[in-house]
Amino acid sequence: MSRKTNRRDFIKQTAVSGCGAAASLLAVGLILPRTAEGVEEGPEYDWTKHRWVYLIDTRACIGCGSCARACRRENNVPEGRYRTWIERYAIPFDGEIHVDSPRGGEFGFDPDPAHQHVRKSFFVPKLCNHCANTPCTQVCPVGASFSTVDGVVLVDSKQCIGCGYCVQACPYGSRYFNPDTHTAEKCTLCYHRISKGLTTACVGSCPVGARMLGDRLNPDDPVVEILETERVQVLQPHLLTQPQCFYLGLDKEVR
Image (spheres, rainbow, N blue to C red):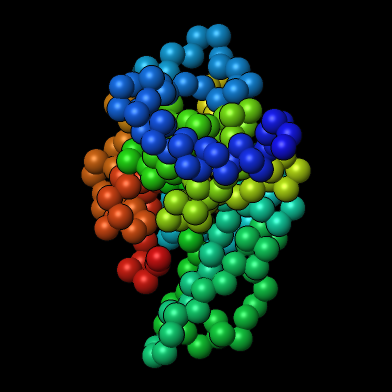
């Protein structure tokens, strides 16, 4: 029998022993928060002085898809995959709620007969929630999924073995496999931009200001003021993942 171990064999072996080893490393603090492989921080960036949060105002979103298109361009997202997407909700006077997201809402939404006679309809942008208690990092057997000191959940593509545990563990469906690299990918909050003093591509492209990036450690940040003074919500709070993506005007029917 050949002593060579291919990628598939390695994944199988890791699935058996890697989870326990990773858990042990996490327990003793050997898998530490770090920046993503290949990401260059700005020359004056100190990640101990930032704690990033994201805010979406569903009352303002018009479903134009500018954010998803900007994200694809900025991050070279493969066709058919999305780091951020928009869902359209139609709440009828009676009957079941209708939810659609054609092509991730990237090119907007055409008129839909199901939305003609409804009590209300609205758009809900979604993305990785960058949870403080994230299940995806906990199940990664090699530490490729990790949280940075400044609160961003990232994937080290050079460490990822494509086992798929993190994709399955994410309750928000925000991760996907890159068909070319066979590694897990997701929203990074444009870490390569925010660490250089820029905002995310999606925030910068929104024509109505429905998306906002905030820094909890900046007391003058308008997002921080909103979080402290207005009623904000998170998706699926019962999961106790502590999402750091917050919503204004989130309807109770949204899931």
